[in-house]
Image 1 (cartoon, helix red, strand yellow):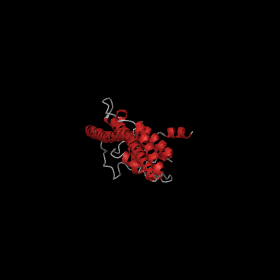
Image 2: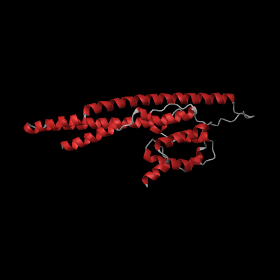
Image 3: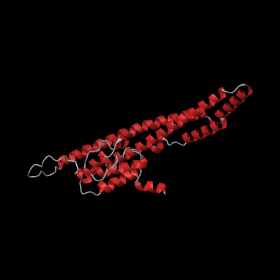
Length: 247
């Protein structure tokens, strides 16, 4: 039993040692890119950091459980067996430097959480600047007004009756369901002769949970349709990558 616990601790410590650092995952806005492009890159990188944080948290929980299991095992021993078990524990602990490596992992995790907050703040800043630029551009180049006022047609509502025969399930961020959702959306809506803003409106209505939160803040404008699609692909994987993974 103790040998299995030792193997588990050794494996977990190596995984924590190999977890990526803030140096590897840090990203700053690129002066050569637009604010929209920077926002997308920063959100994507922030997602990577979040995954690394979640992985490290799970590994630290596992290390804690394994250590507690070993202590429980020692407490059930008696006499010479207990003395032998405690010596083995001390020897293993000294060799693996468990406390030292645990502290290093905890520090790394704290730094990653700080990086996550910074990337999120930078992404919001770039997105805010991009939206401000878009509003300024709209004011400087207003769309020509029609001779007669248009009837009360919703600006970004596509003719939904076109799509009623095709029922699309909402996508809530489950990575394994992304390829099917993407192909269904592309087939049913992507090729329709409607504006990109209308396609984006439909796409947003088909997203929920984590996926909806990911693209929250993007205005329903033509220029954001491809940006949002690319952000979803970067986060959940391009469909062709899933196909290769199953091959």
